[in-house]
Length: 479
Ligand SMILES: *Cc1c(COP(=O)(O)O)cnc(C)c1O
Image (cartoon, rainbow, N blue to C red; front, side, top):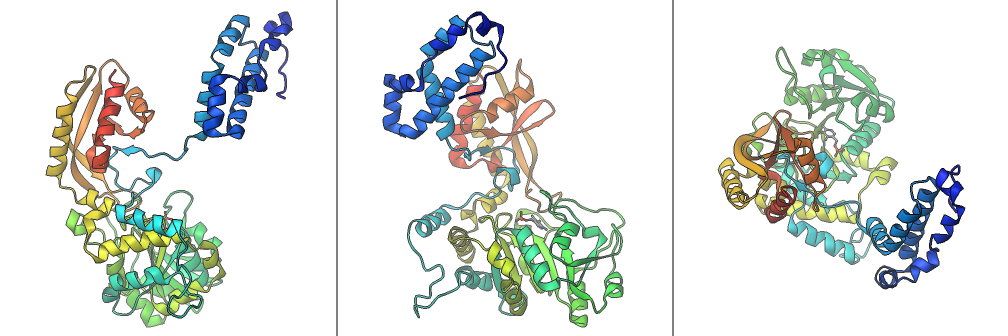
């Protein structure tokens, strides 16, 4: 029973009104509701009916439903139950159209997966698998082997040794387990220019504290020299750490020793060097015109002993955090009980394995985020023109094509943009924020940028198969 609120005037005048409220049993006997029970089961429909009746009782008690309004509400109670049931039973996690032009949009799930990746996930999910079973010997195996072999192929020639890789839930977890395994109780030297917050409460000093390592800051915000690191080295030093500035830049009077110099210093003092590289790029970003950013291979080539990076940023795979590098260090991290707590499931291994196979085959364009980044501005311009040609017939919207910029995003490549063409919508007679909100409420929802009083749509991040749905969404809001 719902608690009664203080009696309102309507109910004081007419306590009889509650009697006109149907019981849940009566609602369940209505023909449309009986039909629903066949489709969606007794439990869910009863719950929906109960919710609808309780809501009406509250409305009466609060004085918001008088006798006439109640009669109307009772008359349409079947529709109310259907609506309530749909609301509960529909997925909360829904596909959206990303028209923002931000390729790795963290709030929109970062990287979509390739079709062959989905096939492999489906296989691994629906059947038993050899996840931890050696089919040769019949003995217990290790789940790492499925991707270890592929990372080794992709990274060992850069490193100059057989690279070992393990996988945890995300890059934040990778950093945490690495710091704890390699530096618990000891000092980790980091430049003051790299004490970053990546977002979502991932702050280097706090992660360090939680990992039970002691932060030893050196240098200044804008300039840190190799001598600053060297002076700070003591017998308590366990690790030299480089953190990629993934979401901001320091410009002007700046200095940071190259990775190779830091690696050489570590070697000289027999102290491991780790880089939180983050972006996970396994391909040459210069191919898309990004020149100030390097990949995982380059870090290993510079002599970094352990690199941590995400699976769903520039790698274009599932959410995951990788630790790649010197076998003895990676094995030490693997033996930490924290690794067991942070390990990933078979679906992630399946997704990673299938994504890495696309790299080995050189099929970069099958990886959605790589394809989006590699789209030429001319191709996007042509798509925008074709799109506009279909749109011209709309009454209340004005659209034109503007040159603009897509953003790689996701805490990678700060400041790096890709040239694009934008479809700019002016919504005659409506506030632009209302237009933007209407697109968001569409089914499927469309997420777009607003600038200078216009809604901007960047087709770079709209999957080709979503274009007709995007067109329909615009048609819906132009009514
Ligand atoms: C993105 C990023 C992280 C966090 O990665 P998640 O996979 O989201 O946990 C950590 N460090 C760096 C340098 C990053 O770029």
